[in-house]
Length: 223
Ligand code: ACK
Image (cartoon, rainbow, N blue to C red; front, top):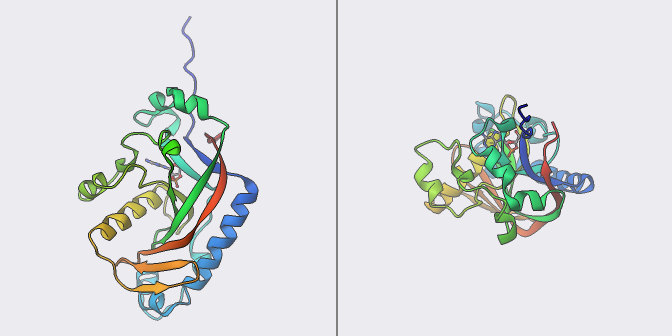
């Protein structure tokens, strides 16, 4: 008789503990509330609204994801390339259900997504699949992404605008990092939380003065 293949999840990743989720959501919402009142932001408002002068309430603009997490491997129930190989890695099996502290070092806001950049430790990078940074990246952006350190795409999606999928957050983050590397930074604004930089086409990057840490569990999405 043929043995049934073990089923693969939608994705593996670090999932924020419920109390941590609340704390991160509050802190990051406060930032959104401040951002849409800044003159520098209002100057570029049309990149969000499609027309100048129109106001935007960023808290309403972004829809919250169900559970805050940092994806390591998107498996798509086994349909994604390398899904089975990842699930079978010794380090993955050993790390399941273990606790990890993630460090958020920056926040990004674009007309599509709102996200937190995660700086992975050496230990955490062992769970970051090879090639994950460039998966689904547009050919034009590939050379810049390949020049970034492994794990550059690591993030927590905090919200997406209507009709945008969560996968976009990592792509927006990579684009911003590539622009920064090319020195294409625009207006800078000092905020309580850190330095806010504008990177054209409605892209904003807040480098946090103090990283925000979050306790997580490494596991897979049950859905
Ligand atoms: O914010 P995220 O990392 O973006 O969390 C979700 C999670 O998997 C479940 O959908 C991410 N995701 C979706 N599709 C892909 C993909 N093709 N490559 C990498 N990550 C993906 C999404």
